[in-house]
Amino acid sequence: MHDWISLKERIRDWGRELGFAAVGFAGSDLGAAETGLLDWLAAGCHGEMDYMASHGTKRARPAELVPGTRAVIVCRMDYLPAAHRPASAPRRKYPWGADFSDDPAHAAISRYARGRDYHKLLRARLQKLADRIAGEVGDFGYRVFTDSAPVMEVELARNAGLGWRGKHTLLLSREAGSWFFLGEIFVALPLPPDAPVSAHCGDCTACLDVCPTGAFLGPHRLDARRCISYLTIELKGSIPEELRPLLGNRIYGCDDCQLVCPWNRFAPVTREADFLPRHGLDRSSLVELFAWTEEEFDTRLAGSPIRRIGHERWLRNIAVALGNDAPAEEARRALQTRRDHPSALVREHVAWALARFSSQPG
Image 1 (cartoon, rainbow, N blue to C red):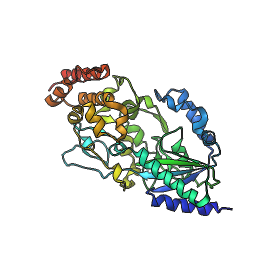
Image 2 (tube, rainbow, N blue to C red):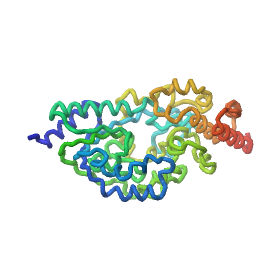
Image 3 (tube, helix red, strand yellow):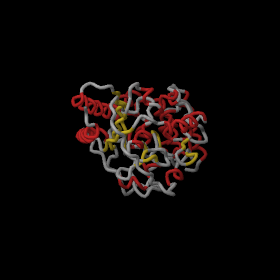
Image 4 (spheres, rainbow, N blue to C red):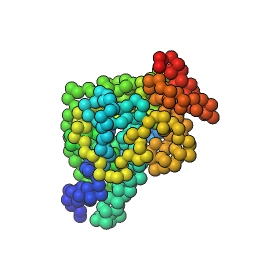
């Protein structure tokens, strides 16, 4: 007979040894979140992300996704790199978190994507934790997840006491803000759940107010079809013209709702070298990145989450960002090099950007 409470504390210790900043335990009941998920899907807020609906209720029912699941171990790993704050770069509207991407001629890439892809690293650590548990209790049923299956990870993390769901829909922690990844191990072990923590957003609506495209329908409700992360990563076709000027220089994801959140004053810097920026992605100009050939894109971004959008959408996104900058001859020349690109998608967005230049003084 195992002492499950004692085992939980040992699992936390093993998790910290593996580099996780926090480990929590949740039950397998997500019934309270299921209605909200189904309403969100019915409203079409998921856009082209068909995978959000393809698994039916399994996303909210862990024991259906992985039969035999009795508890979920949720692990947090911080990814925030140390910020670069050049004196010459204008600050946007954030009280903290400025870096080179605040300069409209530089590319703004979401901080989680500037280093190596987190999926492999996080999954490998979770597997090591599962192996350590097996060494203690013997073979047991489990499955490891890292943003790789229909898992409501924020709800599970909330139930596991790792934080609360912020108004921007992300998990928030008083000790760590929101700059972290989450990973889960569904286990067939009767590990008692931890107690959820109370929410601490209060009357603050900074994250909702700052969204460049007005993607929030209200607290805790995001219309992905207007979210810059969706538009630059998930959307495969043309970015709606009315939204293009709102993207600014953001070419892969968007951190605005996190940058303005007061709780991120307390976010710790990552200890993982793999999450540090590579290939100058925290300080590259739009013109420089637009010049990458498809071979350069594939080579330089090997092992990066950015690579999954492909070179075509990379050029699409940068063309829009170039069109949003003040007219400059260097940017105009860069766009002209792609006017006859084989991709109709790229040509369309390049033509839009050049037309923007023609309509502005400079």
